[in-house]
Image (cartoon, rainbow, N blue to C red; front, top):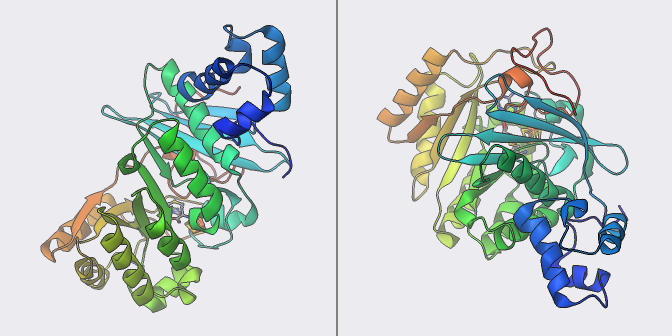
Length: 355
Ligand code: SAH
Ligand code: SF4
């Protein structure tokens, strides 16, 4: 990747690009990028020639392919094309009390979890800092149209953020320092790459950590999440425990519930035992497995998901059943495949807008 894009540059690098332009111009451009989330042709406080020059020298990293909106308008999925032709997705979710953007950190993913549409597609490449930050900026611009502000960022889109730790971290710093989100409103989700978790513990901002556990014993986890063979559960829990000691944050365990596979009483008992090993205890997020083309086993029924939650609670673990957003537009957890059909044979019920 050679092209420097709009959201790659730091304020200092922007000043270099605009060499010879007064400082207040740099501030105007920066405000256009990080406060207004607008395009150069909208920066009418700047000379036209300068705007054109900027648009040419610092192009966007993301070319919009489609924008899909759920029936009630509260979930928006963006499909982007990157330099080189690969595609990634971003999801904006508007709730009553917050607006969350779910961003991708890689095109594809090399981790090979069989139940995940991104994993089924394989790995293409890492995203740059600019490609990650621009997803938040574009989603923020879209939220503004609905009179909303993005309040939370979750690294839960395509890819494994801790396999691209450096660019991800730089993007966290930009989202925190320039877009102005506090660390407690930023969550990084990892499949459990221990070196990444350890690196994160040394970083200066205490972001939330979500660990996609899905199984609480090594033989099942080896099957569901192949990277477990390299980073087994005991070592992972130890890394989580060290993260908690270094940071004053909660860790959450993500658990996609798969019928007959990880929703048995024995699974709840093993999971609760792992939660109790951490101080403060880990919080479990339960979500019924979403359908993907490459994985036949179904998600657990909502009734059983709630029973499982109650069982966990009775065993001393805290658990929440997560609201499942975006299934009708293939925008839900594990369904991001950047253009490949996910829920075959099902059509979104709402209007579908393409740009
Ligand atoms: N690679 C990171 C970040 C992606 S987050 C990670 O795995 O944590 C996407 C979340 O959705 C993860 O918790 C992942 O395990 C989960 N997921 C994957 N496929 C899913 C599916 N089919 N249904 C529900 N959740 C799924
Ligand atoms: Fe990659 Fe996460 Fe999907 Fe596993 S669940 S394949 S780590 S994106």
